[in-house]
Image 1 (cartoon, rainbow, N blue to C red):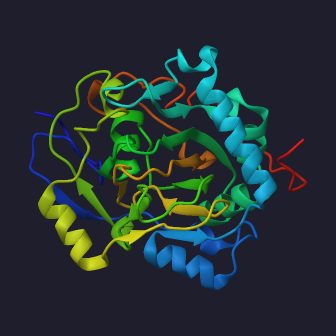
Image 2: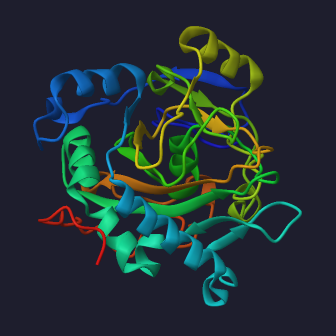
Image 3: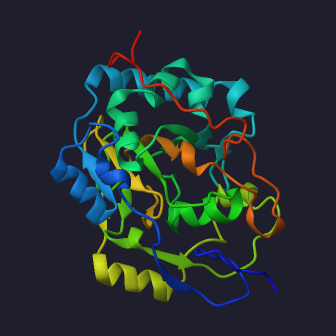
Length: 307
């Protein structure tokens, strides 16, 4: 039997699925650590578990970023690495991890004040990059990302102690209702869904293509959706979505002719550094869960991505 003593977010045990009330704040320190969002937007994030900031990046920066993602997706030295994930059943690139290490442009993006200061304000501390990646959904063949809470995976497989992390999704193409936009369940961040099924070693090798463990059961998911609904993050390229680590989210496959590309930066509080994974699991690779250093990122002084 797997012990769940003293873990408020026990999951993937031999017990049945459960919905557990969140024990952690959503906005830490009342949002006073940094000045980025006005009070109304901060309250919206705290209520819904996410916030869409439209047209945050200008067109010239977006074009430079999409060109950089396209370059990396064609670079043989990158696509043959473990950090490049292909679609199930094809050689099309689905994700590239650790983009902030592969690309100086992506490194600047991770430290851009328009992004990092929002994370610092919400998380109430300095932050570091837990994970970065570019997600691509090519037209006609981009596969879905099934419903999940990132924190459930990060807690079990990476040993992240508390819900003190967030994702920042920078839209590099227009995300419309047809090309598989990010979908979020408002208010779901306040409930933790404990999932069933014991995780096999090296589960990440399969889950990055198609996740089978750490996904919510249909009854729990239906309850969350009945309470909060589903909101699709449809917006123009250059818009940015910030969402809490425990917000339930997913996206449909892309059978439209319009490709979809987004860059994710996952910010974690330096006060929420990873411990040992649960249940004797081996730590996941560095490109999926940073362990080499929890040193705080320094925000850029200037809002400059290009050049």
